[in-house]
Image (cartoon, rainbow, N blue to C red; front, side, top):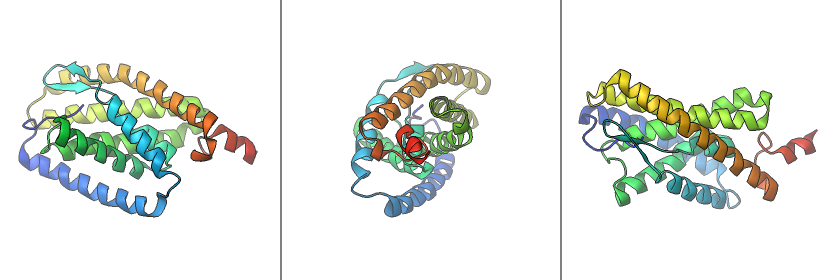
Length: 215
């Protein structure tokens, strides 16, 4: 899903950069109010894990790739899509600068897709669906976050003239519909694992133990 340099005209890159910088500003404001010595280590560990899982790429025709994202996981655990924007921005910056994974001119677009769209879709999908059950809501939220981000990516490259719209939507959609299932399972497993070992690190809306205590 990383968009390389040269796939989007510079004037379009500038638009995505402006959106990304505004969102990053809000995420830093969120961090200054909500991050402390208790949850910073958890965020760091999750960021490292996201960095690792994004390295597992599946090539997709016309020059991009499919991989897991992790935005929904961050947004749900930290009860804010801005947390996902912050973490994904850091991960994408490091990937672009150190490993050349995704272009620096296209960094704004990558942050928009994986951080903003992925984070907000994951957060609000879980918020809307949590009434059907914690586990299915987490799975669907994670799946939807990566699937819709992939569709947005294909539309952006189509607008740039470097990706066929219909075929791009089909390939990006199909690949990420499958990858989204893997992401959903991993997201559920991570949250259940933290809930079993350190439920104090999870918010009440996703921790079964805290929900039981309230009841």
